[in-house]
Amino acid sequence: MGNSMKSSPAPPERPLPSTDGLESDFLAVLSDYPSPDISPPIFRRGEKLRVISDEGGWWKAISLSTGRESYIPGICVARVYHGWLFEGLGREKAEELLQLPDTKVGSFMIRESETKKGFYSLSVRHRQVKHYRIFRLPNNWYYISPRLTFQCLEDLVNHYSEVADGLCCVLTTPCLTQSTPAPAARASSSPVTLRQKTFDWKRASRLQEDPEGAGNPLGVDESLFSYGLRESIASYLSLTGDDSSPFDRKKKSVSLMYSGSKRKSSLLSSPPYYED
Image (cartoon, rainbow, N blue to C red; front, top):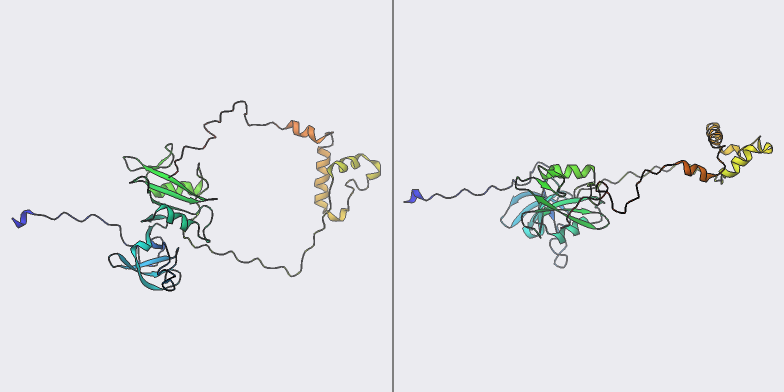
């Protein structure tokens, strides 16, 4: 009788973030812990943690930035895979992380959708945080715009990291990626002073035809121009000498934009994306 009852196998779980120093899988701190009104925080919002062990509702982790090691409750963190796939993160917390001071335009994350069960959302920082719903087809392919599907989320991220293709901007770096400050520009030993002088092209064209200005057709201090620059200006004047008015040159340009119809072409209009 006892042999007839078989326990069902446990569902597969995602592997714990690696402990070999790689930062593609980590825990993201969602709020300061402990709360500042209780004691000085050990971990701060936006900090990345490497998992040491899972203590059942609590994580034992070490900070990748400060090296501090401590326990933190699971409700204060989100698990992150591949650097951009956030698990256990809502829309409000996503916006808080993407609006941290160190994040740049184009910083992004993919998270589970709150409004559509079983779907994902792409959250991107632009002028404000934009959210795009990621749909999943029955064959488990993904898309944001129905005209373009991807076999996996990684392919989707790679595509929109190369071209915006209808999004608010190109995806640049995953959220919480540490940005390396640019080295300070080396100051020159002595300041450089530039002399600025207004150059009138109309006056130059008139002086070119004026015998009195033959010695200096530009009518300006030639010491301000190199020999090569003077030759380039002289060539320009010789090419444009037949034009009596700058408006004549404008007429020679041909516009390639068709404006006969008020309806925008389907090729120029943005693909139908759904904000989540």
